[in-house]
Every structure is written in C-alpha cells, then in structure tokens.
Image (cartoon, rainbow, N blue to C red; front, side, top):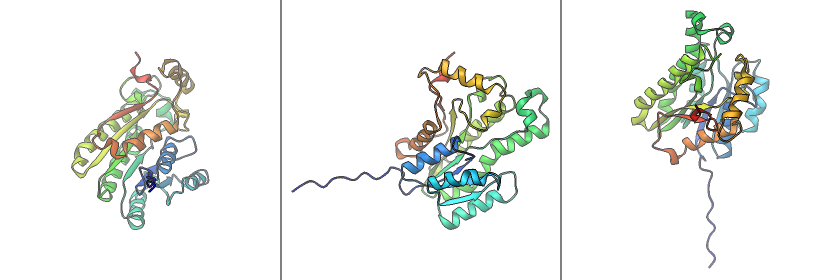
Length: 262
C-alpha cells in the first residue's frame, strides 16, 4: 500500500496579525504583511488617513487583508475603535507589528539640543507610547500567547549623525520592549524590537544625508549589500513561530551585519 503523502501546512496558518505603519510598497510594515501572508497568516492593515488610503488599499488587497481600517494614533479614540473591531470580527490576535514613528520636521532636520519640549513629547508619544497603548489593548486578545514587534534603528545605541531626536526616542522604544516582555511574559506574550539597516522607506528619506547612510551601509556590511523589507518581514515571521517560542525582549539586528563593524 502506498504511503500517504504528508501535507505541510503553512506554519502561521490560522494566526491573525495586525500590522500598523504601511504607507507604500517600500514600507517595512508591508514587508511584514507580505511575509505573514505568505506563511498562511490572516492580516489586518491600517492606513493613516484618507489621503493615504488610495496608496495602501491596493497593498491590503494584495495580501488579502481581512481588516482594513484607519488609524492615526494621535487622534483620540481611533486606536480603541480599531481594537474593538478586531475583537468583534476576529475575537483574538496573535501578532502585533508597530512600525510607526514621527517627529516635527524641524526636530528631524535639526539638532537634539534645539528640540523643544513639545517636539520631544510628540516624538515620544507617536513613536513609543503608542506602542505601549497598543500592547495594553492587544494583550487581552492574545489568549493563547502572541508576539509583538516594534521597529527601531542602530541610532538608538550608537550616535548616528543627523539622527538627532530619534536616537533617544528609539532608545526609549527598545527599553519599552524589554519591560513589556517582562510584564507580559507570564501570558506567553513575547516582545521584540527589530533593528533594520538603512532602507529606502518614505520615513527614512526625511533624514538629512540619508543617501550617505545607504552607501556607507553597503560598504561596511559583511554581506556586501543592503537588506530589504522582506528580510525584515521574514525575521519577524520566524520570531512569531513556535521555533522562537522562548525568545523575548531582544533587539534583533537585520542589517547584513553592519552593526558588528567598528
């Protein structure tokens, strides 16, 4: 009698992921959405506002997003409305990806010493505290455990000229990930900060002399090339699988090894 052929199911089949921060097809968040979708996960995608919607909607369709909703974390009530919809339509959540950051233009272009209190508070609220608020809302939906991700950058640990206010902000984000990993660990919820190398995203393009950062990364990377959004996406996908079930609180570099170089 012929042996039955074993059918392998996609490793994230049946899982549900919320991805926040898709702006266009170069977004790190979109790389995560594509990777999760490819591995069988259902995805929910948000868009910032009506201006952004036409750019993000085709991408949501490409990954068969079951939930497509607006989210501006600076607007009261929008975050709560999103999680209420997830609760009503899905009833649970397995993966959360926070890939948003913002600061005033003058603070991004200027020096940290010139950053105003209001500017610093804005950058911290959108880039860091919004992740904490999301974690609080997501945790009750992660009934069987789950994985949360936030996007950081090497400028949180070492001085990167022109990264300015975002350096200390991302450092706070990495610390928040560690503390959330500690607080949520007993619920089998794991939390990671992901630190990609320089990528040609819309947000990064606002940094002064960003092209120099890209060129330097290529020259210094042991692998001799830049990473792309799918490298980041598949790293997150791996961390969301049972293969990484006892990894938490890490800041993981996805940068071709640039961070190891002196």
